[in-house]
Image (cartoon, rainbow, N blue to C red; front, side, top):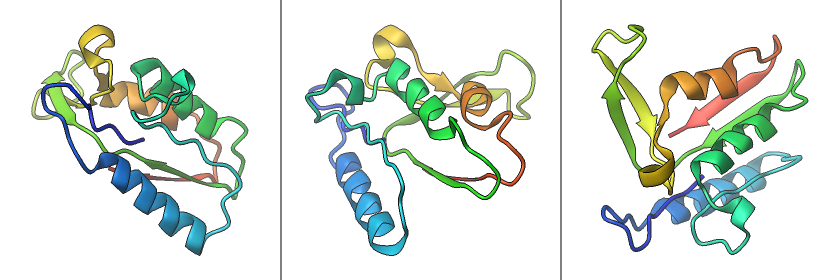
Length: 131
C-alpha cells in the first residue's frame, strides 16, 4: 500500500516508490505466489488505497492462509493517532493508518487493523507488516 495523497494537503512524494522498491526486493529474493498492490496512481478504482479497499486488501491477504504460509503487508503513507475509545492503550491513543479518502471515510485505527488482518489467523501462519 502506497499513498502519496497527490493534490491533497500533506502530499507525500516517496510512498509509491517505497512500494515499487519493496516489490522489487520481494520478487528478486523470494517466491511470491500472489501480490495485491494499492497505490493512488492507478486507474483501476479497486486498486486505489481507499479505506474500503485497504480493509478488503487485508481480507484478501489472509483469505485461505494456512500453517506454513508467510504473508507480507507493506504500508507507506501517513499515520496518525486518535483518542482511544476502548481503554486498551497505555497512552490513551490509538495509532491509525490514513487512507486516501480519510476525510470522508475516516482513518483505520490499530484495533481494526488487528481485528481484520491478524485476529484468527491460523496457527503457523507468519504475518510480517512493514510500515
